[in-house]
Amino acid sequence: MLFHTIVAGLLASVAMAAQLQQVTYPAAPQSRATMWVYVPDNVVENPPLVVAIHSCQSSAQNYFQNAKIPWHQGSDRKGYITVWPSSSTECWDVSSRQSLVRDGGGDSTAIGNMIKHAIETYKIDKDRVFVTGGSSGAMMSNVLAATYPDIIKAVSLYSGVPAGCFVSASGGVAQWNNTCSGGQSHASAEQWGDVVRAMYPDYDGPRPRMQIWHGSVDTTLSSNNYQETIKQWTNVFGLPEKPVEEIQNYPQANYVTQNFGEGVQGIWAVGVGHSVPSNLTASEEWFGL
Ligand SMILES: *[C@@H]1O[C@H](CO)[C@@H](O)[C@H](O)[C@H]1NC(C)=O
Ligand SMILES: *[C@@H]1O[C@H](CO)[C@@H](O)[C@H](O)[C@H]1NC(C)=O
Image (cartoon, rainbow, N blue to C red; front, side, top):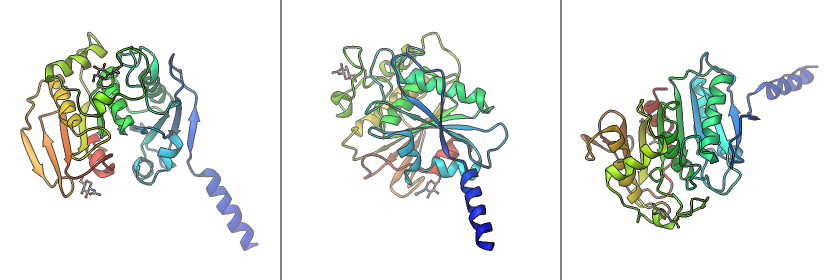
């Protein structure tokens, strides 16, 4: 009898525990990305939203289950909702003409649609919509900050490249761009800023606050991409290219936090390769969660 009660109780708790679920959303042309959502058991009212974007050769399920990707835990602890976009290709499309412009179709439009769908469906607090990702997911985070600045409040991205750095000469989808990944794509701050502005012409509203992490010995997406990304967003925010404040050994040993003024923060991880591990506490702090 007791045994049965325990088994029944366990089954009930298993059945009730929140799980990652696929949901349908208004898809975008030229993207077959799928949308996955995690609503924690203790979801708060008018919840914040964090969009966690996976790296190459991954998926929403893999990323969600990866113990090094902390957003599942963060969601359980703090009651915010997480959306996990899943790509149908090896890496996210951060190269095609359609994906590098607002509502142009492609994966960026798909994720933009996911965010809008989540805001409506889960009564998300529109002032607390955040994006994070690693590697290919970090590249996509930069592209989303450029294409959907009106619906994203802040971004915390790990080991990416500037928005538009993977742009393909043909206009089609290219899985990889050796020039950019190898750290050979250099431009002035103004030119990188123009790349962002061209992705959503005529937009002059607020931009998502950008937190940019990169390892100093990254050989997959060259460490040069840190400085190029900083140039890009400081230009968009009208900030100086040089930090106004530098904090050694913060948020952890051998990391340097560089503040460029309101809106842009860089975190340079000395001796760290690809990709910098997510620091949940530091990213949540950036988001104000
Ligand atoms: C790779 O990206 C650069 C910009 O970073 C671009 O100029 C170049 O054409 C791209 N390469 C290919 C093969 O599309
Ligand atoms: C993450 O950042 C916080 C500060 O925001 C820091 O206290 C903590 O030690 C960092 N985590 C790791 C694993 O270093």
